[in-house]
Image (cartoon, rainbow, N blue to C red; front, side, top):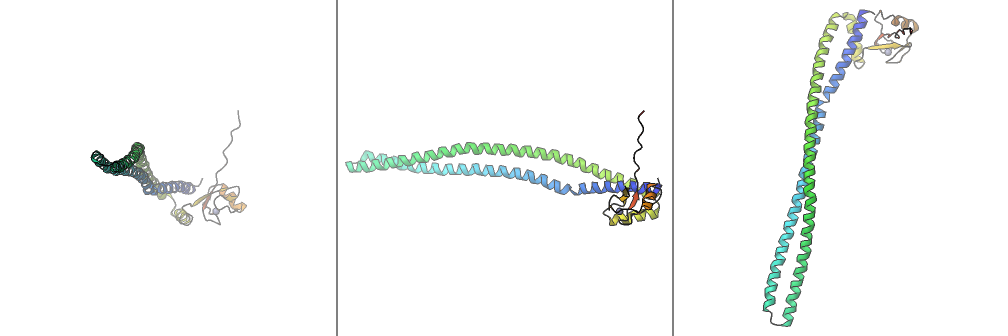
Length: 242
Ligand SMILES: [Zn+2]
């Protein structure tokens, strides 16, 4: 194979690998943000669960205050009951006592409801705290894996840059400028395989004579349509079975 053709193919491999590494590196801030967002969401769930528990405790204290008010009235009525003079007065006080008792009973039922709800809400706080701890642990592990992955990508970019510089130094400057120009215009791809008489990237059919020349891989030939430098990959030689 023509040495420069071989070099531009190698150059293309390096450029494609560098492009891929850069694309993955560019995703770093977004991946970090999405990790942070997951932890934030879990934190917010804990805050919400604690708020619901605190609301419940507040409601319960309010009801207990009402119970105390009714109990105060109840003992006042009981004192009055001791001091009544007439049957009429006695019945009136009894009615108040019975009313206060009914109220207290209803309020105590509501306290009980709040206590049962508090059990569920306390369990929910514990559950969200556990979920937050798990999320933080997972995020930490992922952050470490990401740091390793990105360090590897940065190292590979440096390696690629070194190899590229060596290739460029060895390459015919005219071939290099053709490659760079086409690559720039064609989304970073300056070479194309020719197969079955067509350019495999732009799919244009090559003239048979041109394709035959390309098959020899001994010259720099550009696609008429996309201008990429064309090369040919021969079929693997099948060894006859012994
Ligand atoms: Zn083409």
